[in-house]
Length: 98
Image 1 (cartoon, rainbow, N blue to C red):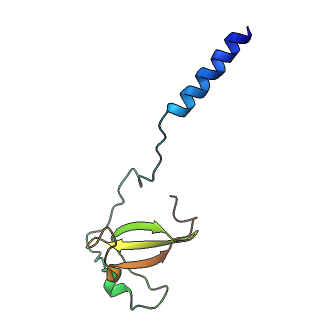
Image 2: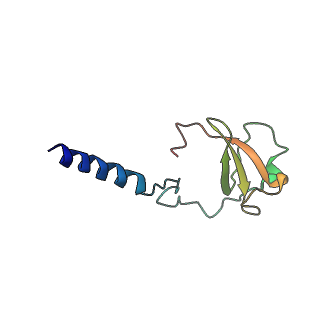
Image 3: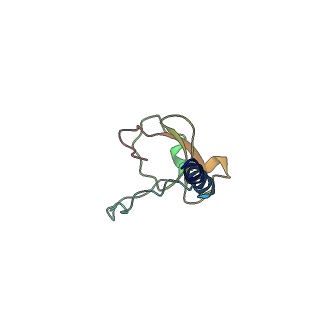
């Protein structure tokens, strides 16, 4: 009986260390519908605006900076290599379900 329990425990431990683990944010499963009359503003034009200005941007969250702050890059530079195309945005966790 002891030998059986030993081998069962060993099998469980071996299986748990071999199984690959992968987790990442995939975004919403349904793309949001955007009305045809919206003009998206490039990050370079948004940077000089005052805080809390209302703009529509299309791009990518490239990195989380703080609890509710992210670096955002527009479609012209999806990797965020050009600092002129990257801006820090605040997205409250109640709004952003990522």
